[in-house]
Image (cartoon, rainbow, N blue to C red; front, side):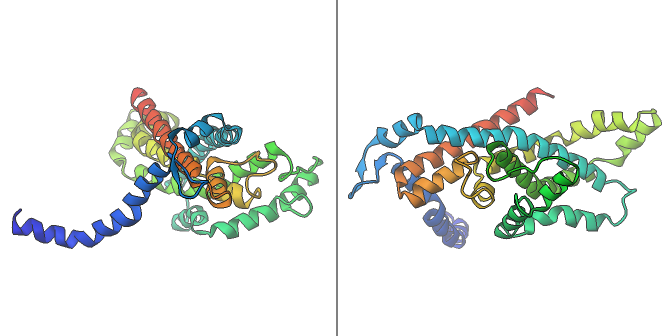
Length: 286
């Protein structure tokens, strides 16, 4: 090996060592752990124990169903809102645009515990402002934390509020990369603003939107904070328990590390498959 290459690898060695110790080895170790019975001491190789339980576990299917409901409902709504917000933030008619951009991005910066506490207060059945507004127009108050449908809707609202602005900023960057000459030519050809948005803006934004979709899919498959903190660990009765909470419960409450590892790899595999499906659909739609 040339001296120049040896010097380069010497500089990379500290990072590679840390990478292998704290990232690569835990991934390999967790995979191996998923094939072991970790409920006995010493652990024993039992390849069908955890994966067999995963296939037959009602709790897993409940968590998977809840996660997919959030994914199917929340992600399209959030991406649509983010696209609309990005278009509005890019409008030259909007005054104080930097202030609005910061305001929409700010929820990502807010601490998870703090914003979860605020949402619990806002949606409280007794003194929450949301129920106050609902009852002020003559409707019955909603038991957000006791009704399974309402609790799921609350999680979707919270996740959308937190991440819509983040995706809007990414889409806004894509909007600003579109050459203005394209719109000028379309205007000279008497193309309406609506047609420009449908036939110019959206097609050119498709790679950026697909990037946001993939990020959102990966994030939703790992969703943990909102159902854990807002609806009290996936309540009521497991109605908002996600795969992330099931993994936490098995790994850190039941100390069943083998089964938790199997769940973790299932989450990763599902995220990859769904993301690849979205990318394939995006390419086929061209």
